[in-house]
Amino acid sequence: MFTGLVERIGTVTSVIEKDNTNSGGNGWTVTVGDCADILVDCHLGDSIAINGTCLTVTEFDTDSFKVGIAPESLRCTNLGALKVGSKVNLERAMDSKKRFGGHMVQGHVDTTVKIVSITPEGNSLWFKFQVPLGHKDTMRYIIPKGFITLDGTSLTVCDVDDEERTFTIMMIAHTQLHVIMPLKKVGDEVNVEVDMLAKYALKSLEGAIKNCEGLEELVKRAIR
Image (cartoon, rainbow, N blue to C red):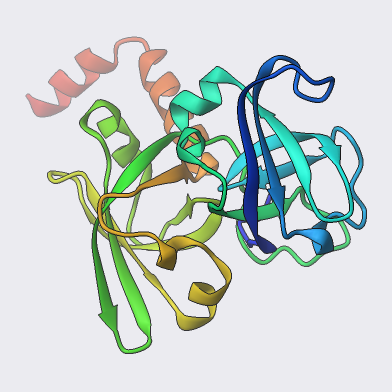
């Protein structure tokens, strides 16, 4: 579990599509450096979110760590586009002794969205994103003033347009200095995790309606 409060911007130092080392497991691995301050209490098997994706540490030293990325994660996230030199948002799994300042984030990315515009206003930035047509159902969980996680950053939704499948967020100056979003440009892909509480609420409601015997007849009777 995470909070969506990015602890560190790291730098990708290695991307190996078929890593045959012991820590690579013959799969896709990424190594991230420039992150000594979040590795002081690191152990093998720990969870660290890279761009909002919960991943397992398979190797580490004082300044860098390696993770393996499964094919499903590559399909659902923007991690497959990482290359040496890429900047990434990093957050360790929640510490029970730490103040909980973001929102409940699982690190399970739902899909990626595309940046369609970036607009300055004062010292803040407006970002508009579009949900891909194949994942339009994601819009059901995105509401004005609701939580959303973008590349691992806990943010507040501003405007929502269900017809256009777009939503906006506004990023203050402080946040701009501590996350990778301002480094991106129009057309770039961003990882999205919607509020998991909204998922549970909708599924419970759908189940209750589906299991309600005679609901259709009751509605017809009420209309009559």
